[in-house]
Length: 227
Length: 198
Image (cartoon, rainbow over all chains, first blue to last red; front, side):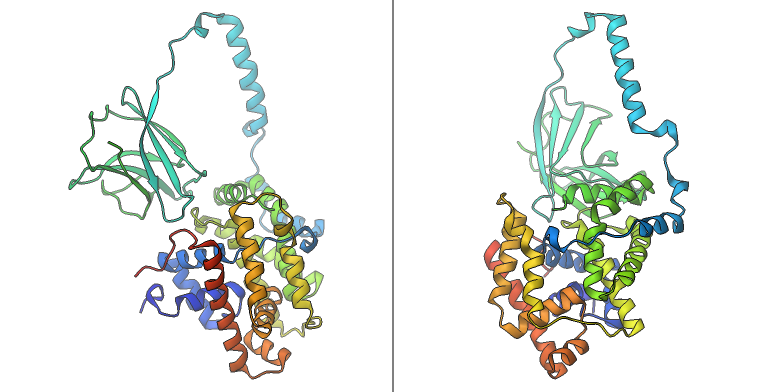
């Protein structure tokens, strides 16, 4: 029997959380945690339910030597960003370059046409209440804007993929994205209007997008297209 | 109070081998994680050892962190607690747990910040509920729960420490967890929709 369907799942989550699940039982639970989404979801539920916030008085300051050992043992210097990748350097360069451009080109470009407007196309939601993504469509129907309630990035070996699911039809990929907060230029304009009952969804896929043309990983947020 | 969004961002950047983000994650969480370890192993030098080992594990397994996890620091706390528990189990350390009233003072310490916060936000409301619900547990259940959670005592150690049969303390722990869950759910409602699949 999978642990996710086990009648004692709650008891196991609780005992794992407080640390009384030991030895082989803990190892079995950890294996299920890695393999069964239902188990990790339920443990997250417990973690959220009995989330203890620690006071300042509880904290203990580690010695400087501990961080130095961690740094040395992981050889972190190999992963340090090179000087030209420092964000602050590029920010200064970008600010200076922008200022220079404005000076050279003058004001004509200030009076540009009004930016394209957007309107809400769908509200996608996940299991957790805070997992919400608002999807906005540009007035010319050629761009989408995804606004996540909280920033979520795909792991390095994964991508997110946005799907349009027409009623009764196969999902159509709209874009492969690295983060739920995204601005997407569509390859063609979206049909006007979209079929009633269409949905939008985001699935987790291997890096670069679904290898099959259809969603292969778990759907993390989904929502109806607003009429 | 740790900012969940910031901790999540730093763990995800760590998964991409961003050493600067990993160091920032350490600076933000090390004091809390060391305190968690210290409670369990009881000795400073061992707690620092646990912290070291746990951060090595965090670096190597950050790509397995679930980006949708609502409490990202809980993932790190679990790594620290398990490492600390493994260390004390393997070394068969005789740990000193202070007097029985320590359970009460541990609660006060652990929950102090949440109660002093001005913002009545979801997490505060939940922390207040946790405190209230702990207070409603029967004394032996509360004591067993706090000793296990804060000091990492196993069922066997609880039985020896509380001088009760193993079956009795197992029952206390089981009932304490179930009563806590039911009580906090009554206070704050279901947390999200992460219910067990039917």
